[in-house]
Length: 115
Image 1 (cartoon, rainbow, N blue to C red):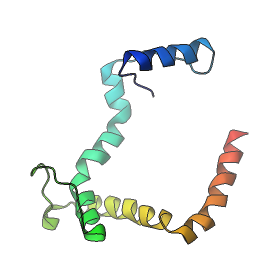
Image 2: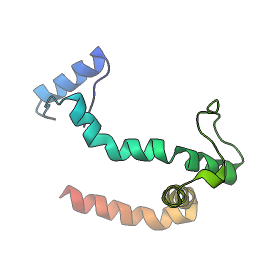
Image 3: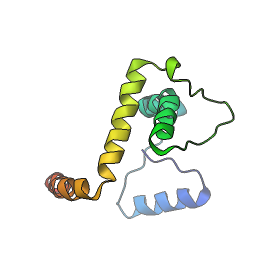
Image 4: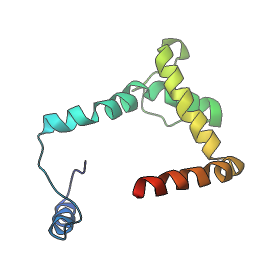
């Protein structure tokens, strides 16, 4: 799904469509929300736990003017697990040795899907 937010973005999308690179289909705002529910839920619902873990791991965390509470006693167990998995993946992939082990596998997967 691509959403154009500017006139220039709209022009680029129409140019790509005219060259047969992409096919554009208008959808309603309700359809956009429905299609993005999982992403929205993840970004909003798990924000406090992800910020808490970020502060725990790095010692720093963005400040949102008390928009979210970083009180670790208020977190849902599922949110804790999701955020923990996200940062575990982040930490693994930020390690050069892990990257060297995983990168060839990812490249093979991508190549097999492109065929």
